[in-house]
Length: 70
Image (cartoon, rainbow, N blue to C red; front, side, top):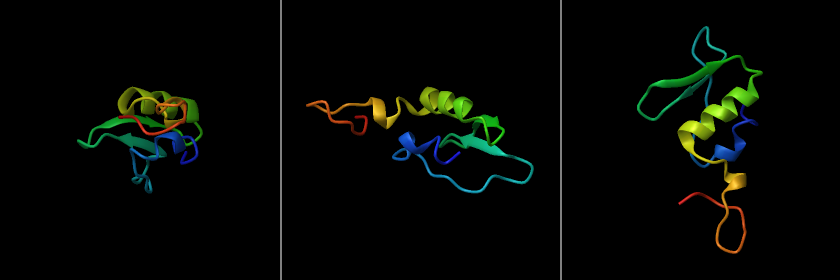
């Protein structure tokens, strides 16, 4: 799952899941905004885009270079 979230790496941290959970996405305010099996990379990417914006690979800086969102 870490690889699936790589394009949002500038906006999130990762760590081990709690007992009984396979994969969780927790907003900065502590709410779980996605939970799923550890092989649901598409579901995780959808939730990341919804809660944390476009992936870094889709954000462009002036001149067309990929970069961080403003």
